[in-house]
Length: 254
Image 1 (tube, rainbow, N blue to C red):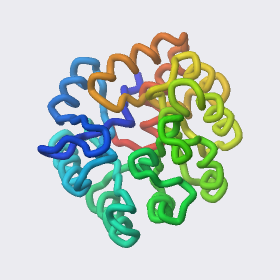
Image 2: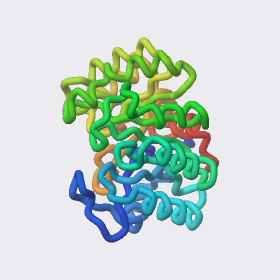
Image 3: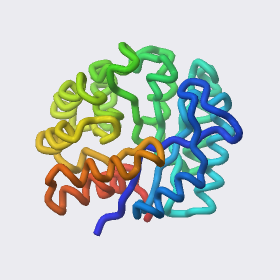
Image 4: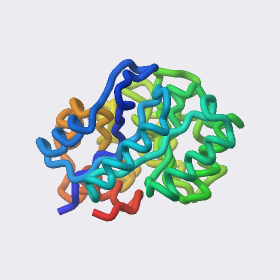
């Protein structure tokens, strides 16, 4: 049986409320939710409005060391905050030195359109280190989070796995995200914030091996699990969405 993997989950900055979203998440909350709902592994990333993402990266690395095979890291460095050179250095540190498995372009919190030159260090690092890059999509921060904004990057980096986080959001842009994934084999989707009917539609169109469980916050773990389990997938498809696809894409050793 495939493991259950939450591939999109945020950790708060130690002692700080996030400057953009004004919420927080402790590692104890993450581990408690994992235990309660039999989640095998969680990929953690800083919240998009962390004042000092380096501190969160260091905390994630520590949790990774304490919980091998259960906690993995995803780097998130805002080029507006760091500047291009420091962004490159921090992403390199996370991937090469800390062993993180992906990069996040938080197009909502960063307010950076994915095709802009400001975002180049994120994309260049993902391509260089051959790790997936996750981008927020939805109607909550247009135009930065429009799924269509990712088309030039999907074309520019055809061998780079690009994850359309939230697969377009609750409703309005879900079909756009599905259409893009149908056209680009390097486009992947995650379940967070998306209606269950569109999650099922996406799986029927692009396959369960390109849809991944994503919870964002510990309180949402049972919700996302119930959503995936409610859409009538056969056991192979269910296993792919709950963990098999993420395990393969991020090359997780579990």
